[in-house]
Figure 1 (cartoon, rainbow, N blue to C red):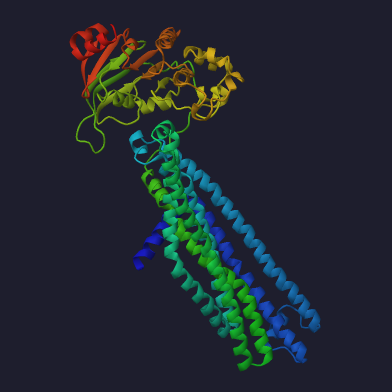
Figure 2 (cartoon, rainbow, N blue to C red; figure 1 turned 60 degrees about the horizontal axis):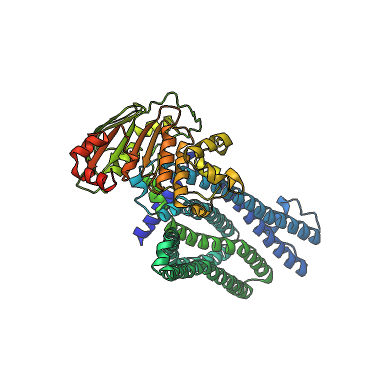
Length: 609
């Protein structure tokens, strides 16, 4: 039990530490102000008690007691008639209690809006840090896990845990102030009230807090699981159709959502249990205290005590209910927040790189030369090198081809070149700088076309300029990129020209058009280094020839690195590097490599070369 409580408070501290020191001070100030408002509740309750006492003395035509007289004297009401005193006290009590409620609503709203805005900032910062990692670290979690941890999970940490804790602390402080005040006024009623309501609250908490943690974790897990299944079937729709697996996916998704709905229903129902239990306690407490007071005290004291209990109960009961529900909400939030807290912890050391939108399309300071010096790389957890002792020296304006069988290490070389991860040993320089530094210092100077081009749901213009401010996507610049990719003729037939939609995930495009759109995207910033990773594999021979010809006719010096299986693509390369088993087995002209690598020669013959 003690260990679980320690873990809970440890997690709560971790959630609070997500906020900056300045933000934590602001939240603390609001908590203090909310605590001070508890005195207004106490004052309102005491005034109602005085009214109850005055009502009895008025009926009995007797004088008020010592405490009531003292209170009237402090308020300068002793000279007024009974009716006037009651009216004035009623107005003051109403104003105090309603004023307290209004101020509490205002403070609560402000702090929740503040925390909500900080939640958005934290989420943005988290995504920024996440994207500074290498691709191996990013791919260590599923896309849905990452999305949840950086969005909904952040909301669980900030609003679900910290926001609820702020409100809970304010209510606990209110209860403490009311307890102290009531104990001074009437120890018996104070003891009865808090034994009753606290007892009910503690029992309810003990019954439900484990369930809240369980269903909070289950909520996060089932959300991720169902979203992963939806993403899986949508991204492999053709395969799912051919294999007749669509109904299977629908059933799996339905099962996950059914479990999720049960968990959400349980979480939603928990506050209702507390509400009804507190309401019943209020009735039982009023009846019990009334019976005891009327049997043990005179009517004046009994009525005043009952009035104080009912007034106090109207403030204490909701506060205890909010504390109890808040505790459950925090437990549920802690269950949902674990993945986010783990992600935040793992990204603390990441330095956020300042965004650079100052795109220089001429790239005057960038030199499109690159060197690999004794580069070796081993994937985490592997005892075998993916590539070993790779040396490349690529000069400005040259066309370099990297060829070899599948699994030979070509993609690893490209990923290292793109700064996706650091080499295990050796060094890589582009324009005299490490790849990551070069990419941040010279944005747009390097163009990259993958084999599988990602198409966003948007227009042609938005896809060509993806990731850059849309104001840079002028008609002239977009058309020039499309012309290089030999896609302008297709654009002419679209209803809205450059601003025509390509459909969800590029559903209105053929495979070849998607690849050419990827080439246009790479050429949008007029790069001086172009990396083509099987980027013409989906093109027919004529279109491939046209695209290759267009790239070769670019009117400025551009270095091209081509990864290809189709040998016609690399036939005119200045240098061909043949990679096998993670090592360069040969390099030279197409004919020179063909002469020393039998497998390469055999492929060339199969292609009629």
